[in-house]
Amino acid sequence: MDFTSERRLDDGVLEREFTLGEIPGILWTPGSTSEPAPLILLGHPGGLGKMYPRLVARAQRSAAQGFAAATIELPGSGDRPRSAAAEQARADLRRALEAGEPVSDEIVDALILPLVDQAVPEWRATLDALLALPEIGGPVGYAGGVIAIGVRLAVVEPRIAAAGLFAGSFVPRSMFEEARQVTIPLHVLLQWDDEGNDRQAALDLFDAFGSKEKTLHANMGGHTGVPQFAGEDAAGFFARHLK
Image (cartoon, rainbow, N blue to C red; front, side, top):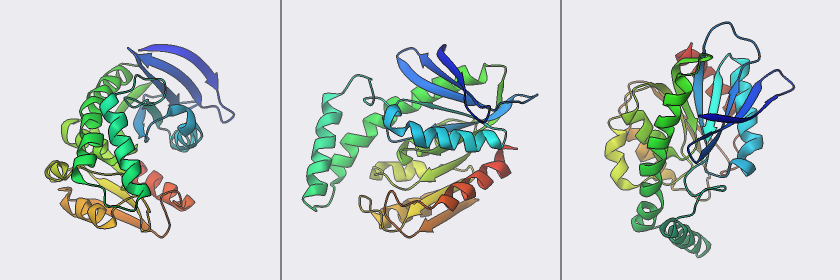
């Protein structure tokens, strides 16, 4: 992990950009802490540049609770190399949505499964590097982003103690079996009128999770209409499980 820039935000949070091999990312740490901070991995749908305002707001909220936060760019997003197969899957998805047609399992599989297969090992390698830093400790949480990535991470990464997931992206049917293997505490956010997502599929996924502690927070509104208090609820969830 090579740090490429460093700056102090107005609230004292230290923001450092880094690269891990060819993967760009950002680490935020609280302004003052005497002990290694718990860590929240901030997922997102891709494009660090356009997502930065939301990510830094989430990181600052986390830092106010004493948590470090980090994110990395997704494969095929931002300045990372594009995949012809992924670009074709995105085009097929756009075409189906614009035509008002159901999104087929074939499109979802082609778009999501290769992304999960590549992104999850990258997240785990990033976690290795972050936990080697003296200012970062456990436990670790995962929040937001492509829900299928969160599902896979919750199954394969034992260092993640709790996850806050946003049911706002497609999940391959084959991953419902993985969801049954998830046992960590979950906080799942669902926008009831999400125009680009299948509500029933999101409810089925929540039902499939094997966690004894899982909470579904459903709010009225579309994909971008997440209320402010939803972030506060998620912050409370992580405060309970990472401290």
